[in-house]
Length: 245
Image 1 (spheres, one colour):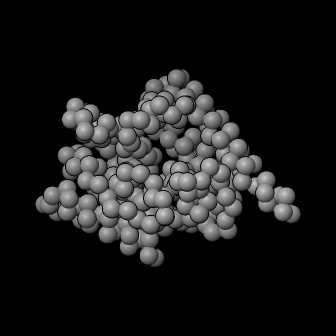
Image 2: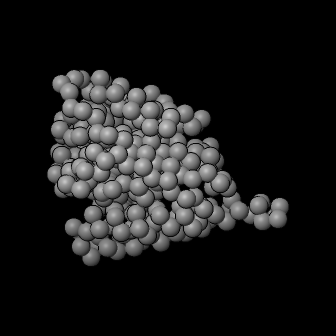
């Protein structure tokens, strides 16, 4: 039994990498067949083929999902929103895919384009890339973000800017909220737990855990005439509150 426990982490990690590579290839083929397949890829490959099986069958994490009725109503109306979430693990991406009630793309730093397979797939499927400190990149991101939201997609943002090393919520950065305000996008808080203890930022292997992966999607933030910094503070408070449930 001890030997089996010792083998779990490398086996689970290897299987996750192989599954991710396979799903990336499927997504790239789908985008090559039809460049307008972005929503199909994000939903049927990102959610159905990749994330839900990876969490349930490979990582062994049951998904515990709670969506506020007002957030679900926006999804039912195909209203694109900006989802703002805490970020503690690479598995957060799978948790978000598995839980979001609409197809999602990501607001991501430009360096993600360099990730083999996944970087190209994200580019083709509609991920909004931003190069920090580059005004032209920010202006282009606003245009792309606005168009993405009009198509009924949700855009997922991790406003902490990087993964939290201790699993605790870190201060948000304002950049994403400037973009959301410019795009006129509703902001919906999301909190993810149960991923850090399986794959923290310092870990190379996916570890065992009996805890479920919990994703809570809260009520959309009420619209106010305020600065992006004020909106950021309200969003940070809302995400933290979801984590206390």
